Length: 298
Image (cartoon, rainbow, N blue to C red; front, top):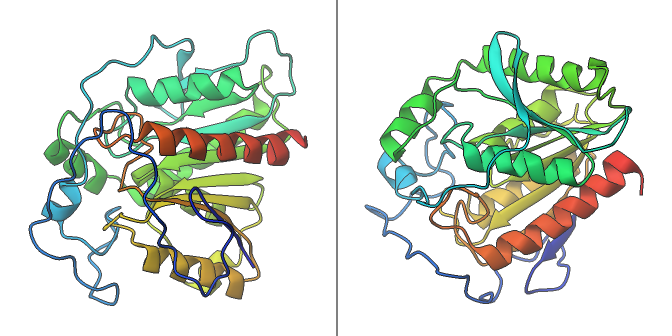
């Protein structure tokens, strides 16, 4: 079974479609670019696992992304080196170990200032937030660069890096996390799910419109509690795919708390031109409550 909440509709049964009525318009909305052609059906042949959603070609997928021009607030944490890679660590002020920990996985742009600020927001809530870098220090400035970096990720090395980061949260004397979670957006959302699959010791995983796994056998090893955030206008991860994922979880005997919005892909990304403040804020309120319950036991 899974719990499904939508911002503009009450809880729905699994058989009900995920579509919902329009939400309140966001502040300074950015117009959605038209795809080059209609997206293929969900059953169409899938491309290689490069981190793409699987239902759009590269040009259509890149059209879903555009960087915002504004700067993030100044970072409050510090860069550390772990497993040969620089990562961003933000610790809660005045809080002694043990501290619950959260891995933060960047979107396809890389570990930019907006992702560091997201780690700072988690630290302000009382978590040791470690923003990993799966791009080896590189940050994209345009969709072509982001696509190149994303496709260049070595999956085995990325999984090892996340394992090292997960272990760091438990072993670092400033943290000594007894409970650990993960959150990621888009590219990072897909890796949040992969990390949950690969890491039975994980306690909580938040998936923001990341590439999904729909094989019940692959999902069967997940021990973490799950929360998913998706947009009903997302052509990269459409509602049908989200339903298939939820159904696969149910077959595997797992649960997920779903929150869906009348929004497009990347609507909650702090770096996205499509950022929808109202929907993003509502989703974040659920994420905060989820982590408070699963990582703090409150």
